[in-house]
Amino acid sequence: MVPQWIIEKKRDGHVLTAEEIRFFINGYTQGTIPDYQMSAMAMAIFLKGMTPEETAVLTDTMMHSGAMVDTSSIQLPKVDKHSTGGIGDKVSLILAPLAACAGLAVPMISGRGLGITGGTLDKLESIPGFNVNLSEKQFIETIHKCGFSMIGQTGEIAPADKKLYALRDVTGTVASIPLITASIMCKKMAEGIDSLVLDVKWGTGAFMRTVADATALAQSMVRVGKAMNKGMVALLTDMNQPLGRTAGNALEIIESMECLQGQHAGDDLMNITMALTAEMLVLGKQAATVDEARGMLEKIIASGAAFAKFKEMAALHGADVSALDDLSKLPKASIAKPFPAPAAGYLAKVDAESIGRAVLVLGGGRQKTDDKIDYGVGTSGLAKIGDKVAKGQPLVVVHANSEEKLAQAMAYVEKAFEISAQPVAAPKAIVARITG
Ligand code: URA
Image (cartoon, rainbow, N blue to C red; front, side, top):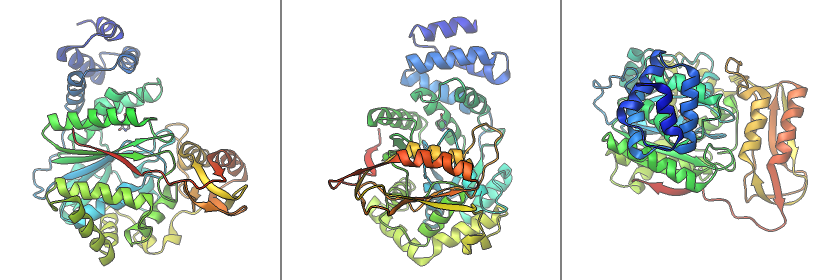
């Protein structure tokens, strides 16, 4: 087969055969197809799309480009959750210990921040000593001991995605439904899970900007998972404003630990977390309905078991758990500056993208792949759409480690808020549930 003829076929909008997709992806993984041909192919897929059948073959080929995690020794139902990424999205940190307390095994392979979206691994690494780089053996042992573990993608899992993802990041080909589907699903299916719950985000802080695109992405991922005989549910959730009250690594750990101890019930963050975890419990047959599951989860939080479970997992990952009991031991920025409301009224907009950009320029995310994260910076005390605010009331507190970065971040923060004289309804946190 000739690589450029396959690129031309996709460029002209034709359907590729399974053999052509496998030839191309395997060649790229092994290095016989160079970056420039893969870049052209990624752009052709971005522009012309793929059929469900092509997407399924792409996912399967990328999954089989590396090893599968052997979870056969785990007897509990193995259920995971994956989010397509957003600002202030700390759901995994709360959901995984809750699900483990309710009887599931959660073998979670997470990612780092990407663009302006935060990453679970960076958040975990803001806890002193936390090691996200466990071997597969240690990963499985940790799950045997406490029901869940959260690690990074090892070199063995889906190497085709590792290579292709880095290429997409710099060739303008990230926000493509077949490419995102294959990228997420090849890693999740390699985890050896029985079922998967997806949190597919839409809005200014998400890769999918409209409900229609997010629906298409959710349907594409659910279809691929079901074809691989996995239990699948996707919730479509709002990412026009950041999730919860904080954005930035250590600040998000603080909010998550508070949530695990029963604070922030009723916030969008806890509403989404409870809904996703309840879906996991039903897929894993620990509850018959999502309502029953919610009742179980509320009791688990109230008993203190969820917070204890997170600390147990963190200790097994080498973390200094005293920093979770005394959150002042987590990394902290030297400057904390409130941003006051310029007028009285109701918050009509709290733009996720602007807050994400503010956190990035503060050093809470990476501008280059090898940038070091500044764990203490970010935003806290965020007011939410629909809140009634008085003139001068802080809408958010910006945490910075230099006056220069503070000024850069404030320029984005100023653009994030819009205040209306008329009352504004809070947006729906969950807009749809997709099962097929
Ligand atoms: N997360 C992934 O792992 N891959 C994508 O393509 C997008 C989000």
